[in-house]
Image (cartoon, rainbow, N blue to C red; front, side, top):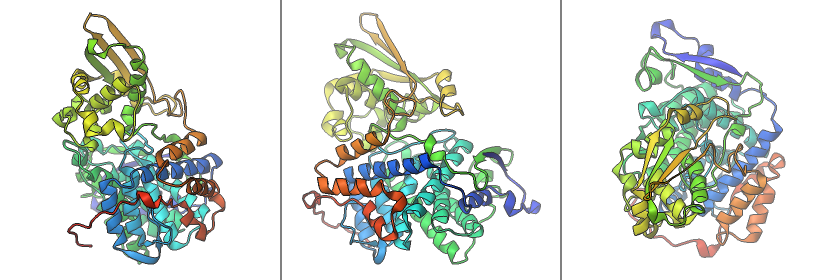
Length: 501
């Protein structure tokens, strides 16, 4: 690996391409790096993971809306849409839109947290859609996905968007563009322009994850993937991009991020060095924001120890800066304490999540979010006894650069009405690579089977799992097999409302 220093340069400096971050990203995207065996296996795991959550969200409103939009753009040699017969094909950018929304809707797939947040699995729908439309094979797809993960993970390590209230999809646009460059074996110049265009068009604010969180939270990554596909298409036709997109005098660092005086350090592999960043990422056992994963596990544990929850006076969760200010009471969002809040808001409220997990001793991607569940009197009472507090110890653990020492947990202090106290802490979620029950292929397959049960047939389940585990050997015609078709009885007829498409 190498560390790339990124800072603003005045226009008169005429910064050379080879010294720009976008060019260095393009260089590794167009290289001939060998594929790492463990990384290939993790690509397979994440395709399984994405399919799990996409199928489970098939009939949810944002997913239905995005799918209807995609179906308005049919294409004979296009890409597949999750849940539909593989004979149904649409333009790849619209398949990426529909599938990306389905993957993101339940907030239930993989994550990587460092200087900023990310869900690197968001790269997969766009790269897979283009692979299907352009007749790529399994190895091509693997290369594209590994590059997408590599770029996004390392941008997240080096550049914090959140402190400037910029949404994390600003790292996803460039990573998808880079991944598509690897997939299609584009030259460095074309990828360079594509990365810049993709970044330029995917910058938006974090209001999408603040206050009353709407369905846009699910649409946002899909939108970035769609825009990245369009950026690559333009650049393949010879069009250029605003440049230098990171280092320019009036560009991203100068006026969106920390300004001309800031230096960012972005790690990247050397040219032709195997791309293994995907191995640093981790998926979710529970359908909720990642920083709640370990605390759900802790709540399940406390459920067995506290016999009467009515005797609780107060619960304090000491945790990292990010957890406190994003999903905790530090966010100062009254919606996070509102029983009538949207599901998208509730899955970003650690107070709600901890209360339900503590009461139920379990977590479910549907049952834990129903309006009836959120408005249960005992839950609301417990919920409002919970506060979060930043502890610098946990903030330091959160930012540890060593993946083996990085922590996303916290300490929970339960004060009882009789004056006694119960306290426990947890470093990482049980499913984390360093957790009590790390996810491996067996767990990914089990998650797939649980989430798709009664939605797809057993025959379809077996077919998909056999196909995806043979990813390296898949021929172009076989990539449609990575789509999963649901049972006819699960296809709800939904009337088209007013729309343009």
